[in-house]
Image 1: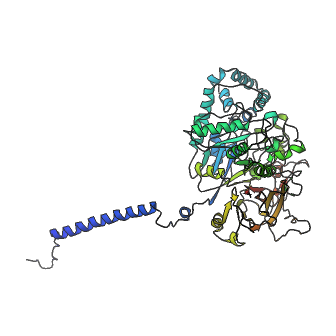
Image 2: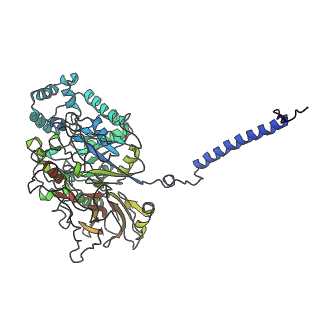
Length: 635
């Protein structure tokens, strides 16, 4: 009987048939979901489904990463003996990531923009020994050299310590320390790099510098390992005390890769101070190059550090008299005599690249087939390459009014000669050791003298003039051609190489003056030739047909105020350039040089800050630049 005004109660019991139907439906839904997931997974595995995401669909390098592959801390014997006693590798990594530090002379330092990657590359000779001796490491104080150096430290005989260290770096002292100590120190170096490695955000490399200096000439190489702990720490650094011959270093690399299974490369630097040895036309043992030598050298040394704190070594005005930008941050001598004119080509990268064409024609292999990067070679643990934020090389060249007057150990150079340079730019898929290292091996890298100028270069045969203006010009570059560091395929009959070049200014820096293409080739007599083309000019300028040169971009620098105006130049420049003098039978290479408008040099910033009157010999204006890796053509 239903009570008045009350709603009937809902029946909560369900017939068995109803439960069965719903249970079947639920089972069916679960089964179909699992089946669909399995089909999707299988389709993806079989690449049946189109990839919506371009990085997946077209996995090509879309990002440029900025870093320094050459920096020293107190683990380097020369740095420590000249005052870098407190700067640790860990501090160098923190600074590169954007943290503020106080440098050795008490000045606060910080980067305006953090780096993406860093290699701390302390000298392999007595790596990390001096800080341990200063801390009274008992094992090192058991050795005769440990006790002697500790005595120098206690007596304040820094110059005596430095002179002895310099003799070791020049290969004149056979002193050795226990193998166990050297391995333990290297293990700590690798562990520190591992501690600061953050894949995708900040990359570190296990690295050191092989400091060969036969006959007081620079043959130094940075040694860069792809892997960290578990592989690179299975060996101890092969130093110049083991051998001053690069061929012995490459043999060490061969053994490492064979026995450990890792990868490693060497990056030479400062050929400008090599007295004609770095790119000499014969081996260190005065033997002629062979095809095997050429292939071996090209394998282990795919890059060259073309610009750094001790000067620029792209080219020289004597070697490139028609190049109006050849005389740049030139530093021809150090503690060695000036290089004789006949050996000068072996001191500069452009001449070496040209000589590589000759060897390739004669031997069928090119020993000097390298890409170009920049780095700092700072010896105070802070990587600074900005003109307005330059912290020098050693402690006595850190910011102060005195750094214009002091020389290193009162003997070797005037500090105003130092360059606020440089940076390594790497086009890679992601910021990881694997991706960056592979990009370096394929030479998809370039150098800048400090500014973060973005540059892309592609070489091909059928670029359209409008391709560089398209939003997908990078995809076109890879589809139709090869990037910097690559090789042009054999020319089809009647075809002519085209370079597609795009450059944009540093977002926080100066406008661009021009893009140039540097071409070198072998003429019909087998002699190397070169020519520099202005291919993109700012402000509507053109090349004077009579002189073959473009008019200067102008100069807005106010030296007294250490300032300039971006009222001249261009934010971006781009071009598809066709080689007007191509011969399909001639070996050739091409690279781009991008030049900024004039800006104040670091010396001008110092003069303003410290209210200094600089000598007339000190340069105060600079046109910073970028050098890309070449693209080669081999008939």
